[in-house]
Image 1 (cartoon, rainbow, N blue to C red):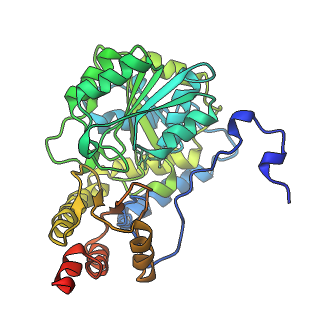
Image 2: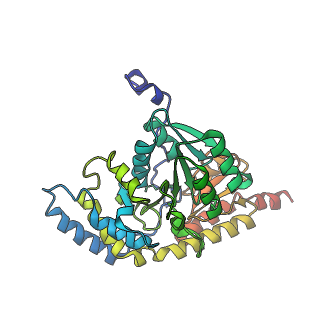
Image 3: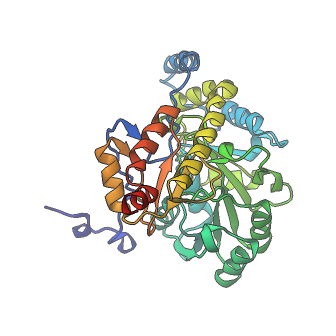
Length: 366
Ligand SMILES: *Cc1c(COP(=O)(O)O)cnc(C)c1O
């Protein structure tokens, strides 16, 4: 059988593996940080109506500048942003790829603080950008000093700050973001994919955009908006950044159907985001209960929790899967990650994992 290695593939892609979160059909899937709440039915009807109207015009190319959608994102984000400062694409993964196509590339370096979102290094490799893993502080925190030291050492063209960080959930302070933006010569991307799940009152890096033309804040509809299947991500930055991204995007990259669906969902953003408080509540419950069971949950500002204190992550992951609960083994020693689901899903996870809790082992041992 032919392997891709036998093909005349680019040398820098040899030996690489694709993004690979397992996609399994299980009763309780809490492995890829999706919003497990379905879209409210009245919103779904509105989406269908707008998509239906768009279908009647599918003989034409869509608005290449997705003007109406950029207006809607600017309104949603607030902070005095204008549509000229907004970009969008098929998931924030494509937004991030556009950024690397424009500001990374052969002979350039992108830096992130590991462990962090695995797609950053994959997008770097796909665009021929060198990837640099810089370290974090204890408990996966990231202080301004640690971050700036890495930037001074490596002088990257692109910096990724995942705030809060996936897979650890760690919030990133505005102090750290400001220090990185001020120390870096290159583009600084703050990935706020999980921003809506942060504790109320948490400031967004959007506050720092003014006067910082190399700072970019990326968001997605995949998580808080429960819209992962629609593939819509976006960013806010200086209009000059948007001009640069126009050079690398494919023409008409956002289909008319995607634009229609996203506009309909954004028109109902209050209702779409109504589940966010409930999910944050389930995350707090997971942190509390895992702690009580003797695991070591890390600080989280997202809709998922990384927890340590797991003797054999692979075995525990498998044991939960056998009970219909799929979580994520992200390869961090002694740790697993779980997404906050509905109350029922979270209960199913907590009941299953209680059977294998360190505190249960202690009780049996005692
Ligand atoms: C889920 C996630 C995204 C979102 O990707 P989409 O392509 O918008 O679905 C972006 N960044 C991080 C860190 C994520 O975890």
